[in-house]
Length: 266
Image (tube, rainbow, N blue to C red):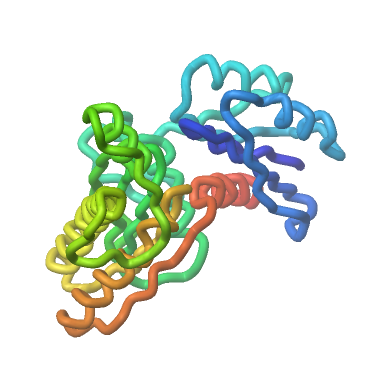
């Protein structure tokens, strides 16, 4: 049985396949611009078999969601919504329906991708940056949301008369940048890193264990060198040693894949 997995984000649609009859089949990720879904329609038409099911997560507009429904028709997309529990993952959000489904399925993705005994954080550097935590009992504790890298870049350019949109190369920035573009880039990296470090410290103090940190999202490359340096510094000072960041290309699709596999096995 062929299942189409769909992660419909704000700017990109990512798609993968799960074939319960051939689990060694290609599980690659196909990415499409949300503004032009003709290529996705072509992919669906060229599939070797008609999909029996589609599982999806959407944080995009209702118009794009309806277009995706039309592309997969007559196979209905089962759009996922957060609840109190999903497989092993438990939810402590006061109102689970308020939680973004991308955050929920992304957490399931990192939880089920590999055997890990201990707390985990998922940091997603997308249009917005989200930092979410799972404790060592596989419970989602909560998280924070703040403007992403591109939003910070564009807001400075749009809200001021003379500040440019600065490029964001992947590097550790000096403490005292000495030109305006470097000052903007370093400031954005400091803001992004500071939000993540704040949560990392909160988790470590709350649970008494240093969490593993999974990083995803299209803007992550610009932040990872600084973030790795800061986490290592704090972690070593607290006696935990260095903690390598773990890149996760498509945790939402990983979560949908775990869900598809579980329902097939059940």
